[in-house]
Length: 419
Length: 92
Image 1 (spheres, each protein chain N blue to C red):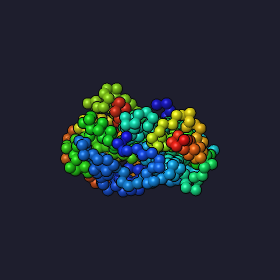
Image 2: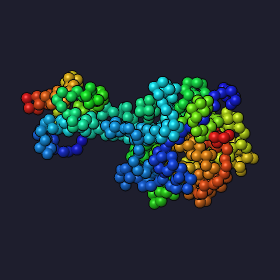
Image 3: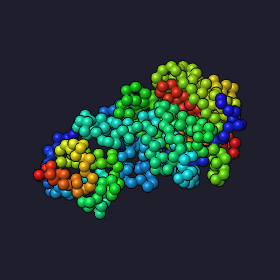
């Protein structure tokens, strides 16, 4: 830990934006998450008849973005468009006026697991069908992972640090945590931080399907994502983006910004064990939660709510549950746990950002979103589950876990605005 | 690529060569009909960047079933240049 929590610049959250399978903005997403609605449904964007999995968490309706010329929109991969929608909402919510001068102190970090996978796929089709001369000049700029962050900066005039963390399903949490570090160091005053993913595509579905990582509950898509439940059979791909506005506290107070929450702590570790599977004891996840709590200067007994990574896979959920029990020890009964992927599906590189956003809303409203489809909790996953219905708790401190292929782990500690 | 029979100009729906070029400009460069004049520069008047011009040239190649060498493509600065070039290639 480089600094004590006391002496370093404090980070507040002043804006939220998202586009998710539950809705095209924060209001509709929170309405869904707090009422236990599912955003998972049969695939509509292509004929999935031959696929072993024929459903996903899909954004309902058109993504609304402001001031985007149609010729520009045609050039954007969906993961860029989703990120732009989320970033515009977050900046509006923060009521931050960006001038040419102040824009130098505002940065963007929007991570992604895979980036423009559909654009690459279509480019490859053009190459196969028509040869190299038929490959679009936009294939590269539309598909590279950092173009969500780059394009958001172009549209919004944000000329500070511009980064893309690519760490599979940890990308969104890494973006937020590392953005906080940038602000602490003084490299920026404000960061738009989050993640974006649009991998509910043919190659995405086929690839994850080939790993046998996905639920195949085609007869009941809304019941397919069921973290911690005995009958879980894999995760559900979701698409979407979420962006938080992180700001140095003094900067936010000086401009009279509404403080939505505090980013109290962050840590990241690696399992260094397997490309896709957690270790039995989830030592890397345990260590990550402990380091994040230490970074926040908090003890396990001070945490009220935990938004679990829990993706509904047979091996991942019990490993995380064991890690939570090990970290919280005698306090495990007073931390309420839920897995909101049960409603959204797994947004991969955007998941950590969306779940941090839901933690902020949970702290603001005093309502903890549930794990739906939790009909028969797996004894291996014993925790204080917020099962099927939201729970009213005046929670002060929440933590959000994210774990990704490659063995990466990240934990964010978020405090209520008045903490 | 589909097995569509390629048609030489005049093309689909009996459009003339310049009408087909105009259509491609509207589709690929987002130009408004009022901007379609022979002197209009792709970069200065239609706001195209270098990548958009490459894509426009590719669309022309596909529509007219010709290959345009890069050195030729670099010379096409205005709508008039493009129409004249195609007339010379296809009819000249």
